[in-house]
Length: 134
Image 1 (cartoon, rainbow, N blue to C red):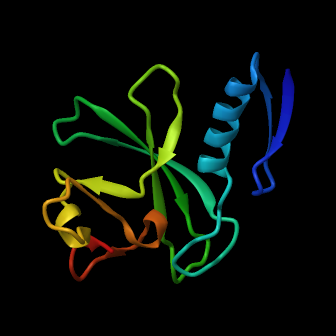
Image 2 (image 1 turned 180 degrees about the vertical axis):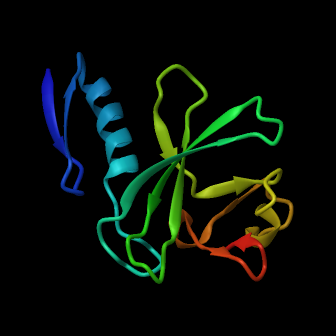
């Protein structure tokens, strides 16, 4: 079965699936990652896709960061995406942090929870005065 999917962000994807359950999983993944490109900080549409690479301090490991970046110059909020730890290569938006993340203390609402949701559906702005993402 071949399906052409519009992500609601002016992008079209063509997927080939064997069963409806496969289609459901692929559709959910596409919509979660590509379906909403509106910055939740300033409501600017059409955030830009961005990939950046960085090396560890010792230079032995390279990290790849997948982000949506707000295109409004006085906002420039970023929504980060992570990649599943399996062989699928599927991505998901980083909308919550666990209790091991340095940002956890800034956003936890119920002390004792092992995770906290990020504000603005994960759209963060770096504050140079505090040195933190807000």
